[in-house]
Image 1: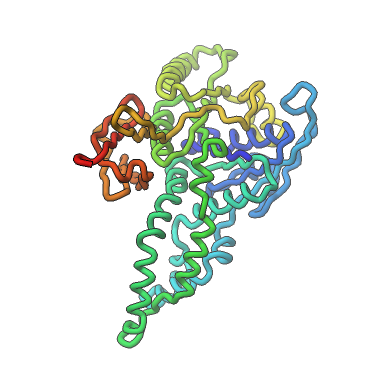
Image 2: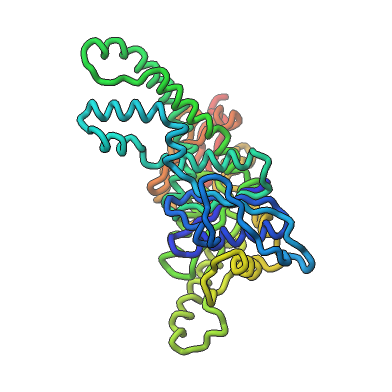
Length: 405
């Protein structure tokens, strides 16, 4: 079972690359599901056929697959998430309470209904769907066409954020509400969350149980960055790589898309080619040793399985598009003399950008706008921090036995 996450700046060809990978994998005989977590779905446009919120079969051409004599023997399904449909099914009781609370606060009618839809819920449902698809046993490969990078990073950090809240804040909040509910009902008419509301939140979170372990298991899940050889796009891809590593996701390839082919010799393109060459050099140096895959600018729109299959053939050549293309470990623990080192992959980072604080058995790591709580294993929790420094593209935190132990 494999999961491939495709992300990149909007407009770089992320959906096309994800769809082409799905077609190639299906032509190689795999049972493939491709789904979209982008609210602005475009999978239906890429395949040139309607796609619903449940598994929709995508017809393949039936021609030869990646091998010289291979025939289409796999299947391809696609799904575009309907967040409102999931909301009614999984969030109904909580939504009713929020509507009542907003009505009490003065937001009536349609305003309360709209405000009760919490931003980001569609992303949470997307995570739950990925988990259910992977565990269903119906597919060999799940391809995820992620939203543009900012939304993707928020999506992939949700398991950490929600897990921290549910473990530390949720129990206390529930106990406090249960204690003050009778008093509040005597003095004010404000709606107070019932145990049913808290149970609904717990059931909702249970759908995400195991998502983080699934998506950060490098043997199962790989993230692939799609870039164009343009300065702004490459800069955003560098930040994305850093933040994905921060949350423990395995990047196994960078796909450089829309290169000007050598067949274009018109002098008008000389300056553009020079810029692309400069950015290609920066990509090779910056992302090494992550493998780079290259795709030329297509002479036509890549719509429909036939054109997508041709694009995938030029991108992956004779390679297996479902394979794990790199095995960089975002986190590892290793002994070094009398110390134990927690090593974290944080490429394109300087020491001034990193905030590191230890509280009890947790290590809080801040990088830019993102924060992560890392629960230390027992082997490190009983030790004290001896120091931390950046060594190449890895942050190394040294732990030692307590003084006098």
